[in-house]
Image (tube, rainbow, N blue to C red; front, side, top):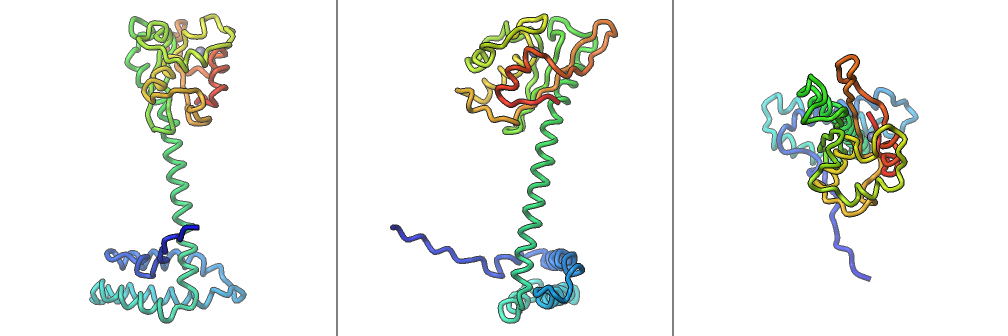
Length: 249
Ligand SMILES: [Zn+2]
């Protein structure tokens, strides 16, 4: 048995900022107010919350009235330490919930923005080739978004077969993939983009690729209409995309 080092629980002062106290007080009051409005007489925290809300209001108005931020803050902290009726613990719980929800919402937004960048990358590259396939790009252009790193890669059909380096994991992923389309399985733009990602991330084995972290968007040149258009699937690639849990957008 080793003794765990003693970690002091956060004090009231740890939770009240030293600057922007007025704004903090208003924010804390507003957070509590949202819950207080729904409270009834059966809520045992109601009185404590009301007391704390009044005290937050007083903190705010003291600063507006000219009391220095430091002394208004100190008076508030003293009040919580000496007179709090349970409102402070209630506030800390609700604040932690709100912070967690905010962090989740931000992570979700970031995730969605990265996924959307797969299409943006493909469209951006496609727009550089308004005349369609040529020396630089093949019939298909792909954008690949990696939600782990936030980075994007592009690929074009035919490029992998001429690539300087064909990553061993890419070769492994293609093993056993049946050719169900008119083109070889290694000719795809998805393969080119994935190869670049494997090299950039220095992946050494397939298991390092996490499911639901990679998203592909493909644009294909329609020679009849003379336009690029989004393409939903390539049945060759869908086999190895499924192996690594990658998606299409
Ligand atoms: Zn393909």
